[in-house]
Amino acid sequence: MDADAIEIRVLGCLIEKQRTTPDAYPLSLNALRLACNQATNRQPVADYDEPTIRSALERLSRKGWTRLTSGAGSRAAKYRHLLDEAVGVSPAELSLLAVLMLRGPQTPGELKQRVERLNPFASLAEIEAALTGLVARQLVARLPRRPGQKEERYAQLLGNDEPVRESPEPSAAASGHDRLQAIEERVGLLENELASLRRELAQRETSPRGQAEA
Image (cartoon, rainbow, N blue to C red; front, side):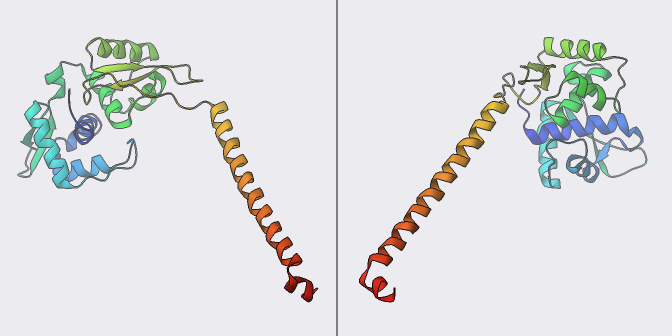
């Protein structure tokens, strides 16, 4: 699956608004732009203009993941997603995919908290079972644990052909070593500057002009 970052954001927003504000769904281009660029429940925060979003919608339409439609009593062009039909997922699984699309890789605990607005899950075990099903269909990838983290994280694969791989974050010890090395380098520079100033001062004191002034 080869959706780019903008397509993933657009698709995630369509799913989210379908679940959280059904009366306002399908979305107009302007409403979709506002949803894509909102500051809450987004990682990272974006600033897409309407031509960019329209272009992403056209690409998603060619994939069979969105289509142009219209709302009840409205002549304005509106858009809806077709992802549940395209990949065959349940409403609960669709909600998890949407949160992963909008917030990036997350642990089951984080997903449990953030997916409540879209689809409540009775327990963490229910979340994990849904994720296992999505992993089996190669719609989600299970990522290695970060150092010091108890839970595994999960990432959506709708925008990637290969499983997501992330380099481990630097450990606290490594970060401390880097900071110490930077301090030592700074101290070395200051010592060199001080030695240079001392040499310059000594040269002035031993010069004929310096002795005459003394």
